[in-house]
Image (cartoon, each protein chain N blue to C red):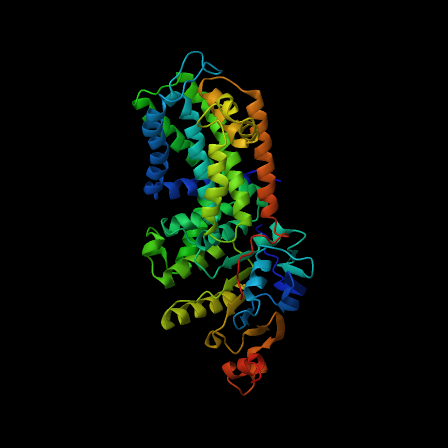
Length: 267
Length: 244
């Protein structure tokens, strides 16, 4: 077995995602506006309401804007991961997915390549977001920008894999609203993205426990520590575990013998 | 992947059910190398299911598909490498140029660099698309989109070409042109072709004809011999029309 065809195909799939992205500038801007509104409007308004104590990885008192930066990176990865995978539910996109799946390579490799492509695009958006935040004086340690990369990659793969798994089970695009309501919002709000878990525990123990079990919380914490050139083993472990679980679910969903990806099709 | 073992297409005892609904019932069909086989069937006959199974979108435990001598279930990658597909809906990336689309597909088949360029040039030339290679697919008309997809399906030199209602939505002249072109490909390149359609005028007398109806293969043979003195359209209707 030679690796060459594998790498050729992966490179092409990633490059295609990049080209598609370049052609969809609106998507890029939309994906940036969302976290920026949170950062510059919501956080500014909220800053007075929420007192934050010093918890790792922070070594000093921080403002709320600083606190939610990792969560908003997570938000970009979450929305993009869902969106790019769910776009497969469009028949038009499903066509290109069908074409992809006729390539003479293992299906898991093709899915992984697609996932990697969309994740790298999301990471690019995260850096654009961090850059704008920096321009508004919301800065991180210089090394943090580097060490964040692997964390963003793992978190992005996890969320992309979740989206891919969902795309194999969801039959119609209308269900995107359902995904919004039942996956994206709960995942985002029931996490440490907007408020630290100890703060959550003050109001409800149950909510705290749900947040602590949410894989998105661990992804956000992984990013948070990495942005400060720090490392959170527990977050890494849970994020990797969730990535493996969602990835396995996606491969299962796209397994040809399960026939889950068949659509309505009559003829 | 480059082996040219051309044993045509062989489908044996293929069945598939969506839950309780039997979509394909014990289909057996052999297409010899270099043969153009037209698959005629009314809507709902099971064509899409058959194509999904042939392209391994999903699989079934009942029956066997052999493409160019490779069992699709046992050695899927070798079998898929032998197959070129043109789907009913366009699967081109409309924001990319013809050449970019072809390059992407070549890479999916492990072809890159000079070898990919050489094959792309040859495929473009064969489909008379060279002059348009740098045009974005969005600007192409339906006929040229289809040609691009056929060129793409031939890049990796498959021995078997599968087309799912490839002329849908095209004007009469373009339709005739593409149909003639694929007939010529089968003859000149010894390509095994399975051409699904519901338009009887796309079928020539020397083609193999397979008629699918309600998940069953009603008949298969040389068109001229099957229809005899009837027009193909009448013959087709006599087999598939519902009793009043």
